[in-house]
Length: 371
Ligand SMILES: NC(=O)c1ccc[n+]([C@@H]2O[C@H](COP(=O)([O-])OP(=O)(O)OC[C@H]3O[C@@H](n4cnc5c(N)ncnc54)[C@H](OP(=O)(O)O)[C@@H]3O)[C@@H](O)[C@H]2O)c1
Image (cartoon, rainbow, N blue to C red; front, side):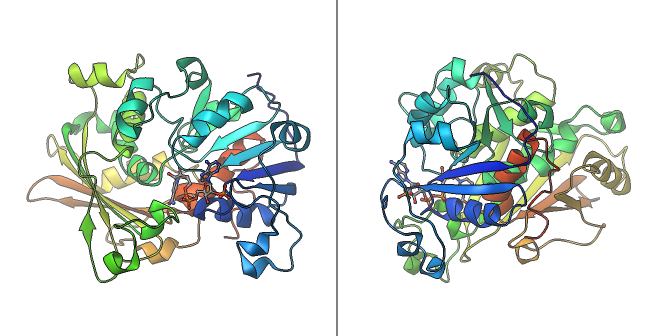
């Protein structure tokens, strides 16, 4: 798994899972990316068909969906995006890991460092080995740029996980300003809401129109697979170097969160509301606001709203932004952090392309500012 981090300005890309929601969004961004010279589209279900059989609006484009072919990929691609349901990239990566190309996996298969966590939270019986996992960078561009830049394989973040991580991380990063007012890490609540596209295109009883329309429901309460992903990242940036999720839970060292996801009757968008208890009243909202601004001052896609200005999902729709607002309830001394993203862009395809930009030493904003 040698990493070849050459600075390449002409990039040949491929997408597995083009007929899915995230695969299509990756395609749309890459089509307008200034450094992409070709895009190969791979489909497990529609190989041999013209792209218009899946997307009629592309009747005038020149793309035929292809069978997954590793030899072809090695010869013709510099980067491959995998946008498939859970369990697929676990198998694909066995063949892909030694090919001379970079890989960005949008699924959750490769995000957790500990194999046991994948078995427990994703119900994948035979996860990729610890050896493969140790070479994979977690694709949170705002915190992991160096590792992403030198890795051959990147595990793109989950959509809920990314929003929660961006909302909470400034409170966990070691920070001299926060020493006066540490948060109570045992009582962090993340209340999350997503549009229906978060579940992918295959309809289920939960996601069919009749159940989503004019409805608001909660699901996977305290069992959502993004919980360990959020905790893993918070643990790492809190400087727990010997990260092992299960051990940390036992030792009560893990920055555990309570996570409750909801389904809202809209197509796209995520809003995450985090409730965090401050340990004392030694810090003002204005100071915390400055810490957040400072944390993300070099992150082109994280915008900290002015105090009193709360974001709505529609305001970041079709963009790669995560907008964050802060509020301090002085009666309870609880900090409320609100973050919004487009789940298919910053939560999936846009973040994946941002990762690609880092891997190829391009500006993070390349091909992403126009969307
Ligand atoms: N939806 C979101 O908001 C979101 C956000 C972040 C991450 N993700 C993750 O990204 C991945 C894709 O999500 P999605 O929502 O785009 O899913 P999706 O709409 O269900 O599409 C998945 C695509 O994967 C391909 N596929 C299915 N079975 C396959 C197989 N056995 N081998 C190869 N390809 C197969 C299919 O395309 P072909 O028939 O063309 O092969 C299918 O269209 C998932 O792991 C998801 O958890 C999704």
